[in-house]
Length: 146
Image (cartoon, rainbow, N blue to C red):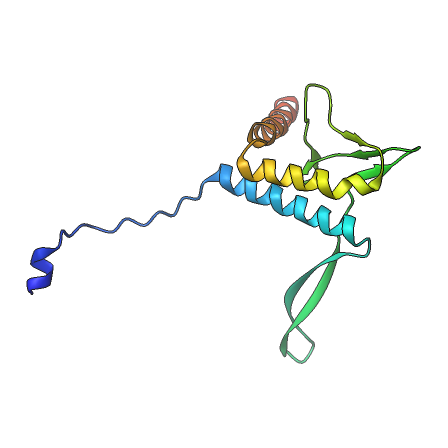
């Protein structure tokens, strides 16, 4: 075949590995997006579709809502906003893990800034530090048990 003689042929190597740093960024940005939705609409609930089977064996899809927990706390005249990765609060600076805001009106702009920073990769070190701390605690528990 003339076409194949003209082209440079090679063996295809599928890339199955996903970049874990990029996946963490995506997860953090998704969590911040949920918080933006919750700040704009207090009744916001995440909806997912589940496949269930009933007693007769019929399979159907059902919408299930999940309550989204707030990352902020309204105190005496101020609002404290934390950023979480999973269930853990990220340490934003040494010993500081919350942002103090004057009112809830500032929530959405600050959350959008955090989302942009997460997408740019500025929060990768914070996530890595949190994951390293989590692993260290687990290894200490294992050392104590053995």
